[in-house]
Length: 183
Image (cartoon, rainbow, N blue to C red):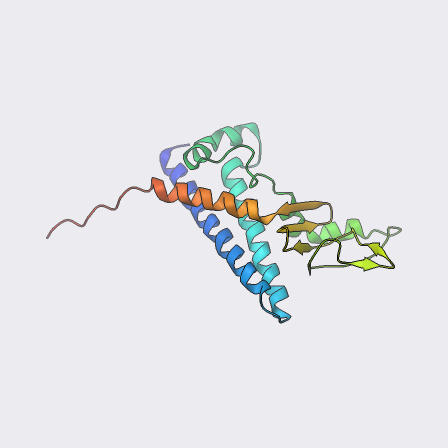
């Protein structure tokens, strides 16, 4: 990868980090409002975080082939992104992106059918006939910061912390602006 392409990836990473951090702040703000629109606003911001996090994963690791991982190493190195970054995993973003197939598979004929979607609250707050509901389509627990989609869960705070560190690294490496030439 040449320096120009590397720098374009770094610029895009900075944009995605800004999206994550803005959406995290907006999700927190939406949770303080007592109206029904806050539910939709919170989920809109959470999905923005998940999509931008997956975009960062693509920037830093490509399609996870050995050649792409090697190719993107200069970008990870410049921005100080470790191989075990929480941004690496795209599983839950893929669940949200391919939710239609996830629903078809999950609610196949003969399987138990209980739909609880886009919930916000403690994971053990939902009970039916004295049993905790463990089958969560889209669930967010603001006390832990964990988003769950059926079998996949991801905590949002580590994603935001990783985005903040990457954003700081991207900003620190910018070259100083060249003053305009005197007339």
